[in-house]
Length: 259
DNA sequence: ATGACCAGTCTTACTGGA
Image 1 (tube, chains in turn blue, green):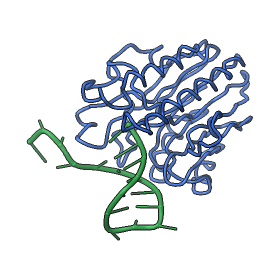
Image 2: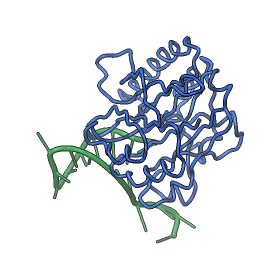
Image 3: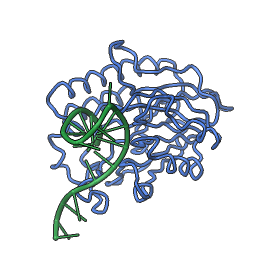
Image 4: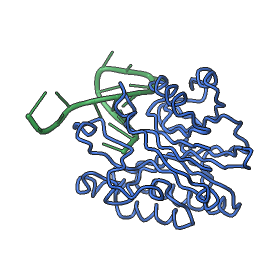
């Protein structure tokens, strides 16, 4: 089965691209981030018309995550557990009951954290800690689990075209990278790195300063797999060409293929 | 030239993104 993650940067601005991705890529599940709309403004009918079930956790103006799936999404968790006061829509999880057994899928939009230091960076680190605690509990279920999302963390030097330009940024600070390693150390596999050692596997190019034509990208959209999912890992695809479409998102879809 | 953005909002200036 194929599971894709994509930060669409407004689902309403990107509806044509979304329908094209669904048609061309035909993922079994698509994790979306940055819907930038409330649930009732999601273009549900159009996506259902393409053959997908729609589960949203939206928010007015910014944030917002969704999971589109060919089969129903069950046992849904809206919002990251661990802080009832957190009103930002950045986490959605559910179970897809496939012929090969249940697969648990999450759509994650980890906070950006800039400027750092400051309250936004503190929120990012605290959110990371809650995610680690939550995932620890999910791993105890010993299920195939795919955590797809915009993690807003550049893992390593080889994941950024110009490391020095990002040295002081919340996406590349040592503490951010350490949190991502702490999460992975629970026993998760970075699907892209399990399949490809190359430099320059970028998933985001800024709209500014000619980042796309100059290929000044970063890798911040990740698919992390539980051991039961990693055992079934067949391959990954970074849909780089999508960044070249007219009026694109600044992120491109990333897919994992599981046996 | 060597880099000049984009989306949403109680919109005409700001916030947030990365």
